[in-house]
Image (cartoon, rainbow, N blue to C red; front, side, top):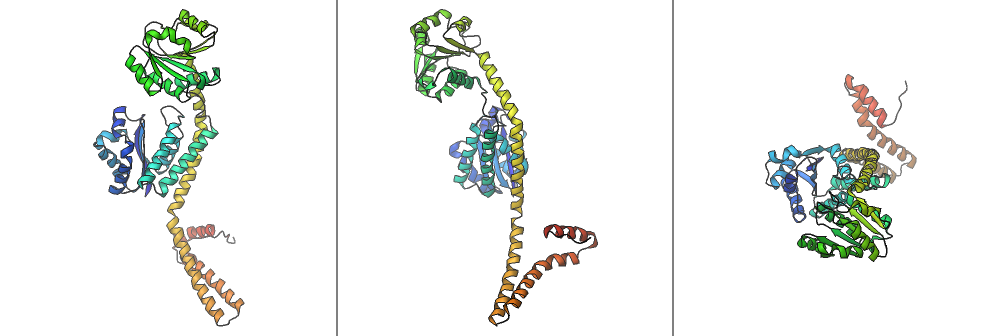
Amino acid sequence: MQLFAFGLNHATAPLALRERVAFQSETLAGALRDLVDRRPVKEAAIVSTCNRTEVYCNTDAPPAAVDWLAAWHHLGPQQIEPYLYQLPLERAVKHAFRVASGLDSMVLGEPQILGQFKQAARTAQEAGTLGLVLNKLFQRTFSVAKSVRAETDIGVATVSMAAAAVAIAQRIFPSIREQSVLFIGAGEMVELTATHFAAHHPRRFTFANRTPERARHLADRFLGRAIALADLASQIAAHDIVVTSTASPLPIIGKGLTESALKARKHRPILMFDLAVPRDVEGEVGTLDDVFLYTVDDLGKIARAGMDARQNAVAQAEVIIENQVTDFMRWLGNRELVPTIRALRDTAERARRHELRRALKRLARGEDPRAVLEALSHGIANKLIHPPTHALSHARDEEREDIAQILSRLFQIHPPA
């Protein structure tokens, strides 16, 4: 058996193919059992996300496991193999460590993948396909990922504009939980930013959009309320944070509207994020004393600075991973020697029991205990030394020196010069 990993991800395969080879959570356990039952695979676990599908297995027949993936998804081998990476032994271990640590993610250092690895291990455990080798691999993977995050800055810096907006809000307000947030627009950027803010449980979410249905959809999702875009002028004053990203060719928030809102708020500050191109907020709004205005370029600079910080942490993370790969491969190699070590111990145990029985019989006959102990120790020593000395005495000329060196190393002896 050997450790083997294969799969495809956002860097090797288009989205259309990734969608076809993804596993649904409700069918994953059945797929794992099918892989182990039908193929020469002893253990298996599958990591399946929107960005990757990877199979980790303990197998003597890697090609059969690869063929299984194509067949399970009703694909021909030629449809999937050009996009696959296949990683045996040490490369599989290193890949698992890098992926779980966030070094192979679409967003460098993102933490969600570690949770997805843990879920993959739980599913394989429940399916009965997680054996000794894969369990050891996954547990070590979790440990390595934890070390990378604890000992480097790989996950510290902000690397997305949505996350940057939340970070700025946390610096300006004592608590996001006490603030009301207004989202203008209903596109991907608004939805992503709302998701980031939702994790901090603001006091109120409001959504405004030209298409009321889309605003209501987001309001339902985030437990907020929807308003008409025409009501914007009267609603800005009721919100502490405004996030806007529309396709309007002209600004929809001007200086006069903002001044009116500030007056109604008795000059309590407003934080505005203009994520639109062209801009939704007139530039003059940023000159008002009680307005903190950030454009898409401002947030982009924060995100780029965060990415640079994470890139600097990659070298540190790679050192941690390399050391852990070496340690895991040493464990894996030692495990392959277990049968030999067990046989050696069994041989020594049989010799011990044989000599002990002889000694007990002699003691029962009343012989001198000292003489019996001397004979016992000599008997055990002779039985243990006989096989290596016999091998050395009967070795061919060309192998005698090698055997002598091995014996010197095994028994830690230093023959006289």
